[in-house]
Amino acid sequence: MYSAMISIFTKSQNLRTYFAVYILYALILDISLWFVAEAFAYEGYIYRFDAGKTLFSYGLALSLIFLHLRYSSSRISGMFCQGIFCLFVLPLLIYFMRSDSAYSHAVLVVSGYVCLLLCCHFLARVPLKISFRGNRYIFYGSIAFLSIGTYALLFHHFRIQFNLDLSSVYETRDHFIQNMNPLLGYMVIWQGNIINPLLFYLAVNRKKYLFIFMIIFFQAYLFGVTGMKIFAFSLFFAYLLARFSEHLRIFLPVSLMAVVAVSCLLYWYQGNVWPIGLFVRRTLFTPSQLTFEYFDFFSQNPLVFLSDSLFKRFLSYPYPLPPQLMIGIRYYEGASANVGIFGNSYMHFGALGIFLFLSILSIFLVFFDKMVARKSENSAAFVAMVATPIVSLINSGFFTVLLTHGLFLSIFLAFFVDFSNVAENRSKKSV
Image: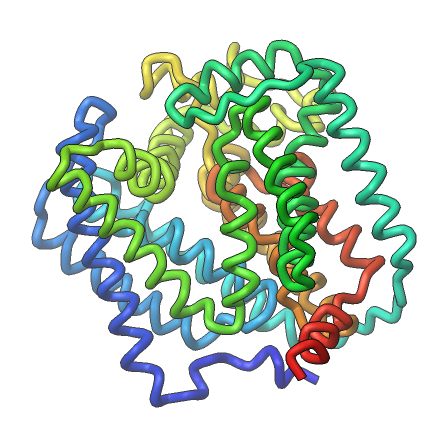
């Protein structure tokens, strides 16, 4: 029953390769942070050599790589662990090593990730049968209803506008936030993060070229109206994760290494700061910086205890401003500073909150694992449906990702579909 969930560590001949890839990725991150500190020193980035921190960080990284290879699974939960590990935990260790961040905060993040890893591993052994057969009419009907509603509301409020300039997204985003319908804020994220990436993967695999063009066009419209940068990359990010889901432990770090290396070379040779600013600083190191700043602030000030969430009607919030604005004013001269699941969990319940929220996340992920296992051996389409929420977890809190960013919607849709025919159709055509 659990043969598909076994660790990749069973193939001992790959052990040295995996270790080499991850250590090389850490070294490239280390070099890239030097460039980031040079180009973005005004944002508080520094590159300080400390022999003790260097030995501690790389020792911690080696131990963590061993645990990651030993306990990560090959299904949806494994993909989330892999994404969090490569996009957040390893960059955070490098950021910690070259900054003045506290040892205890780095250990807390590593311990939280180990908690997620082990919870997913051991919960997978709990017997759970999901016999719901699903209903494709509900599945496609839900997608059609949400898609038509989303684009109809967008057109009603904003008509046709295409601002595809990544350098001016903040003005576009401010205009969208000021003029949007509250429900539309949820719907556009569900459309751009969940529905469109899934439809794009299915269209590419079935070689429906007209649908591919239409999905790209409508995704571009989402980006052009909202200014949300993730919409510019989510289709291809989700497709690549789904396409290489069976080899993600090599594909993801190697791909990130290539992106980081090219970005650094462009900055070094041409002085082009845009790639290193977007793909290295913003994607890999800003979440680490924000997490440590949340740790620093809430270790010295009152915790929030969910008083800024759905429970705010019943709880007293201890600050005059929302957390992201308060942290932004203190550390970023007024910019909104959203943080990922680690910093957000700490803000609510301290160190206990990290273990609590990551344990709850593992329950959702293992439930998804078992649902996918009961429905189809081909889990790639499910990967496309939940790929973007991995990035969201690095930049937003758990409940925000669950509701606003569509993780719960993914689980709901997964109840009503079986993607096994995707693989079957493709194999018949190849014969």
